[in-house]
Image (cartoon, one colour):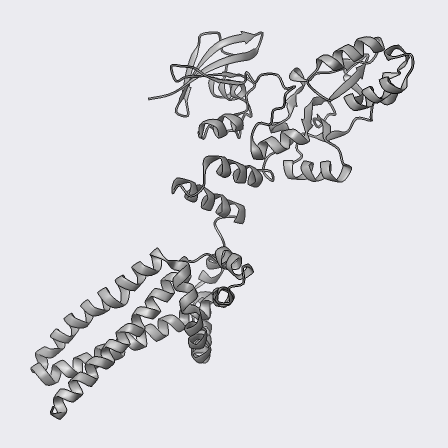
Length: 424
């Protein structure tokens, strides 16, 4: 073997080694960009040491990317220079063209597309394997990457792009919601799980007025009635907590708990007639209608209460909200053996829906996977009136937001039943 052939083999081997390094750096860059810090944190909690290395690298992303890009460019340029020298010796000046074509094909296929495709398919595994060597690379190239980062930040600051680059267009909870929706579309998260997770995220942005039981649907008891009559009403009610009023339904003087009533009946020898209902009722708790569900949930936990009366800015009773109402925003409807059958939403054999006008748009969207707007109105009836700008008559049909609404029944100015069909 002559010297030229030996040199050619040595150079080819060095080029191959440099392409392998380039592939490693390209795949590592893609893997660390695509991997999730949350998944790495979970793996770290399971005891995987390399996951901690990945987290450390992601926390210094600017230096990491600088080291990868610097190393990648160095090996690609060195490989191209070696190939050019060999082809110049073999073919003369036309060797530059051959070297350019060959190195472009090799770099694009084997050092870019192939490793990055693999890294996209297995980002976590690739990131874990690459974490060790990358820690060494970031440490060795630290002086250069720090200088490059300083130059980059200076240019961004001078051009005024630094401030806009640091702004996040998407809040954290919206980012989480987007990830949940994406995984749902890909089939990794079931609809029920997506609704539960979305319900938790909505607690901050949803106010109690959007989920409360409206005063028209409240079940209350006139405390001035005879005690035995009140006992009959409590026994006939599916609720364990019932507001009591005196003289005026707006004048709520307490909340009667069925267990307190049962305890009073058990300890009073005279029975119902000897019970002062007002004395065993607990003091009413009033909350503003603008309270967020997260705040109300925390207040329920702090006061160890499950029931509150909702009032508007003038102190007028608007409805009631319970701990169960908030939990249903997360887990969906919670029914027990004493609950009355739900007639708020019924699916008809022809594929249409028959819903109560009081049905909340949030519940309808959650049940059907729709996206009807709920910013201007919280109920189906409110949405129809808002869009139609009139109090509709029975039989009238309205079409908006991709759905057709037919008024089935109405009581005075209240829409009771609506039939909904998805518009073609």
